[in-house]
Length: 251
Length: 314
Image (tube, rainbow over all chains, first blue to last red; front, side, top):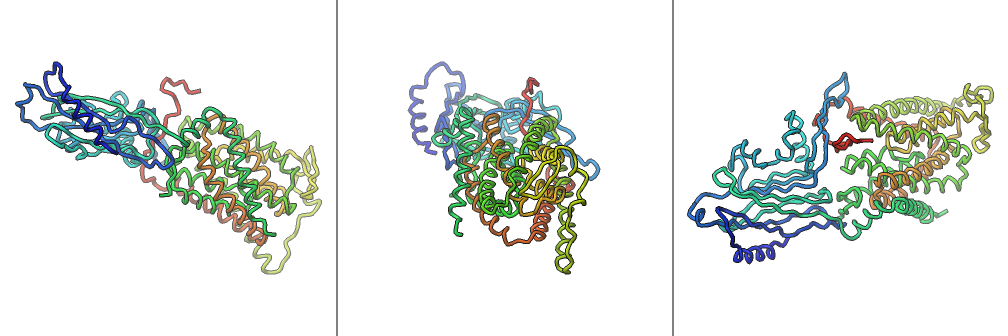
């Protein structure tokens, strides 16, 4: 994705960046506010640029900055089921429901999360793939871990340490993958600035995954004109069924 | 790149993979007069297509391929429309019951198990029966002994139940009640398993009702064409899960495959035909049996919650 215009716009924005800030602040900009799904869509990357603003108090600080970018897709309720042997058969026996789980999630950082801050702080700051599951649903960690593992296997969840790159000590760039099976809807992007395992600032933005052109037309027709759509599908079926007999008529 | 993004299934698929797969299944479908749904639906779900979309789009494809095959059988007069109509009325009622059961099982989380066990039991028992019978027929044919043909006076008891009807095309004069009961049961399992049910109708007509083998396929196609057209409309108007593009790819592969299959079927002898179908049915049964008794790679599985969070489902 072309991130250069976004970067330029962002750098231009710094000059007018004034106001009463007490410590580090964060400005972020996404390469595009939407991802358009066309017939050839097989997944894409979005680029996020960010600038760390420092005031007099923090300017003298010489710590190392850490950035964690979390992109969360639309949320759905899900069920994790566990099979156990029942006689000779493997049968679903236990299950747990999870509410408002993001269908997709990508977590990018400049170095592994465990090096940035402790597991306790990670969960307090909602960093990492574990934050996909809200605490009240975490009765049995087995199921929560299975959910995240299955999501990672299906390439819907992605943990990307080293995917945030510092261009200068104060300017960074992160690449957020949008998977091929990303659902339509609004995605939240949250950027956290940390230093010495403490969060200094955070900022969020959104992007939207939408269908356009043919994909949108078909989806809308299916949703709004069910009868007509079904009839058209049958007409197509009939046409091809009949056409095949014409093409194959040799005798 | 031959990837195409499916607008309803909401994922990219490889066009050639889908077309090729449906051509192979279409060939089998045209050859045996089965819809082929019991083969292609599990394959699509395996590719990651949501089950609801797979079932709905396959029903559109089966409508197309059964029409192609039906035209071919129609031309050879290998079709009993009256018998087809009786079967259709029974299976329509069974379908409604199947859909209701499907939704209930999905809520309880035991749909996979039910589908697995049903496939194993249905396909396994039908496959073994057919294999046994056709091997006997093949062996008898080879040794030159003519098998005893069923004649009047040698009919099973259910032929003589009330509501007897004449089916001149098949040379039958039997009660409509067993036909309706059978098609109702088949309609029920067809809807429950997301398949047309042709693989059950064909052997049932041959073994239980002694419909001539060459009449069976066309008649089964007739019933399948109408029930799958109905299913397409039902899915399109209620859960909007028919994927036009997926159906198109499936149809292009399927109709041509079915056309070749119907031609190849002409050169097959009845007992060879039954032996081959038995082997295919058994192979699918074994696959499902394996899923049930082998330790799964991951004992955990993830699915969308059917209930809304307020528990307001239904």
